[in-house]
Length: 172
Image 1: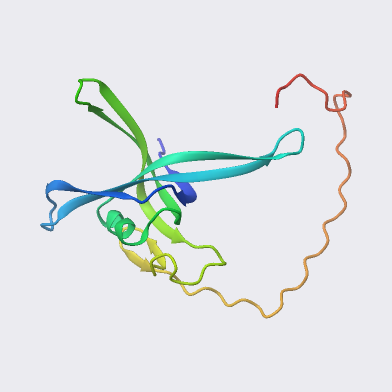
Image 2: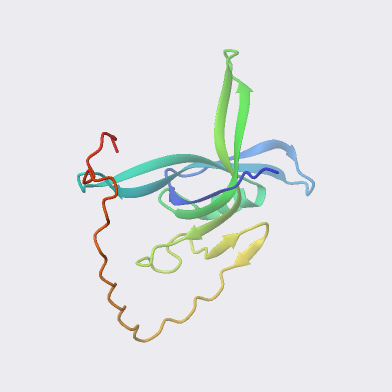
């Protein structure tokens, strides 16, 4: 058994490039592919306590109906949730060299927005696409006043089992 599944939430790095492929599909329409880079970032604190950020770039490919959604609603800066699988394409360039490209082939895309954005600011599309249009479910109503969170219990300092007070030769 094997599994090839990717789930990403990130921001589109540049406007998608949409291409129409030669020939027609079963419905008599031209096949379409949309490609764009997606940035995912993680924040962490280093040993000195400084906050660091690591950004990873992913090449995304959307086919057929997903490409239609991307063409209509996605632009640079759009925040997306993507589910898909890793694919590596191979081709020979004009000089005869073998070239490879690893990308995420999207099965599901969902446009996300930030809370401070007005509805419809990202092209007016709300919802996700997963093999057919699915309108977004109505958001649950927010309570009028949320109760204050309970204070976190006091935590004890960790016990030093090695007896070296955290000094080690590891670079991380």
